[in-house]
Length: 336
Image 1 (cartoon, rainbow, N blue to C red):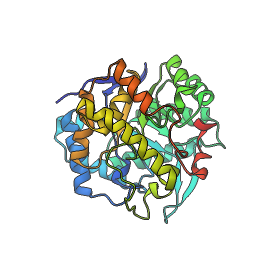
Image 2 (image 1 turned 120 degrees about the horizontal axis):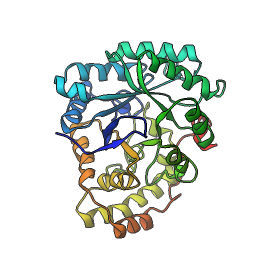
Image 3 (image 1 turned 180 degrees about the vertical axis):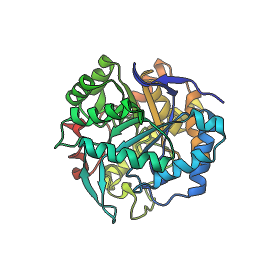
Image 4 (image 1 turned 90 degrees about the vertical axis):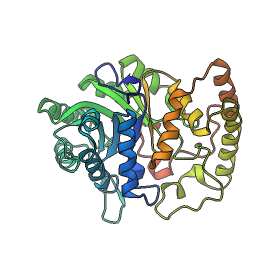
């Protein structure tokens, strides 16, 4: 199968209009089944998904090893169509603690060497630091990726969770394919300054969190019990009154979805798709069933009436709670 495609900026490759975000297969959302995760990657490739997104710190290398296995065991034609996007730079302790970010040129090359080995590939298609290292100018970090491109180890430079000024500085250093950043019906901060900047510079958006980590999927319930290691147990939007308020927004969205005969998740993903051809949503499906539901969003057409109804049901800034806890928010150059 093939899916319609979208470009990753004016300098990057064509990729499927939906990408697969693989983080949840290894970390932060509780236990995941390895066999089912690999089956999901295979199903995504079979459906025509070409963009796989990971981070070298997801499960401290576990996610890259998993993707490497999935690619190795996929049919050759499907394996060859896959483009892998990797985030690097996050420092982790043996206990899973977050220890900061390292964007030094030597560290960039070191991280890349390990990723290439774990993934079992000879190049990384898009490489990006996960968060800006405040101690290292973005020009140095991006410059190191550009050197890896010259040597054939990387194909394109990406960015992640940085603001307009940093985007401009990075783009003045090397061509930037895309900015990976959270964007959904309840996370629309990029619309003020970041999205206009990327559009001016010909940089695409790979949007993660399009279902707000399941919050606006239509499947999340107020009484859900979370594993101790689940990111959502600490996320402000999943706590107490914030959660109840946000789930009320989901119910308003559900009414619109039901009128169109689609699921809440599909209409939420379709809304992100409708915001521009320069936006590629990443879907975080961990099972073939959730993957199939998400891919169904590609068949949902939203007209002006639908978009107005969605906007009324879930206005900008309608969500209760920040998208990360305070310590994590402090690492986001995009929020400054």
